[in-house]
Image (tube, rainbow, N blue to C red; front, side):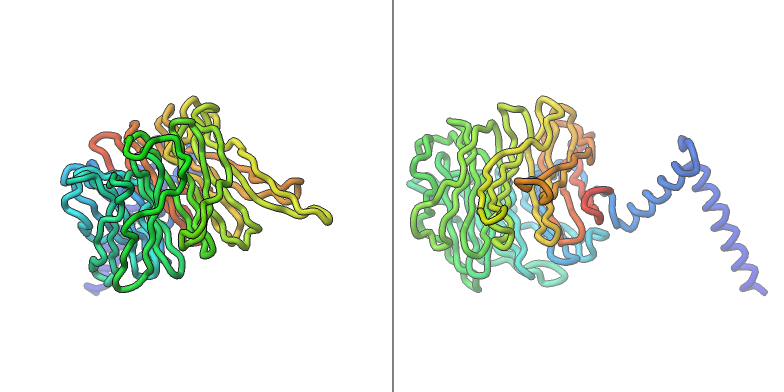
Length: 418
């Protein structure tokens, strides 16, 4: 009888708790549907099947995110401690381990898409201003409960100027590749994957015709690199002539790079290249400072009748405000031929999201994007990174509201809900 009485007491307590919670949630709700939506949102936040949650509070920004199955890794800069750290989730973002310090003497940290995961190997490149300004590479091995660190080395000596601003990293089955702004023209380096990795003693200049003299410290805009197994593809900005350039060259560095396009722009570029099975499609999103818009450059081929056509053009994704599209990130999923873009609306201090598929029912086939607002981020000190496991999308960003917070948003339906 005591047991039955205790059971009734528990049930009564739960009933009171549910009624109290419902009454509290009902405040400000205009209808039962509103209440249902609020409850569903609370449940989703608890389970993190979708929604947004705070990873860390304080000035922890310039984050990059990478995904490997259910494992999610976030690299960030702790401005107060001046440490470069990584945190890991093994359950799709529901729970996170304690921060692991990658480098405890980072005086300044510039970021691009500089974190990639190859099974249980995590490759990181980053810029630090200690001593001569230098770009560094380090490999972490995921041991399950923590990480082990190896292959730490400086990689950015270029024509006597050891700069490594705004670096990006990629890999294929054979090598790991890094590109960075070398205080003038961009440069890249690579190393064969293995227990001992050794990057080139002298990185390779990508564009010999670049108008900035090397070492002028005038071109610190982002570059982005993607290796597709056959070529290394690099997108970079020329801030003297306000051009977006894309180069493609052999993984070994043999031969001169081929410039795919040369566009008038006014800001940083973020690039991704689908696999060669996608009929040679190249997508590159960037902020167009002249048009004041987020734009997407497309380069692809298609067949109509007996003829093969090549399309190279830029389309506008978002021009809804006077300063929209900076700090943009792009991922492309080959399974459904969809491009996803996260970007910043500086006019309205908003994190925005766009998704687009190539409409093959029209000639020529073209990408068409839908845009939405994901979050208000409080100020101008903003950066974001995005990754996908093929099913879920993850966006990590710094929200400068209040004391600041590093946040993560997750969507399981292609960005329709977060």
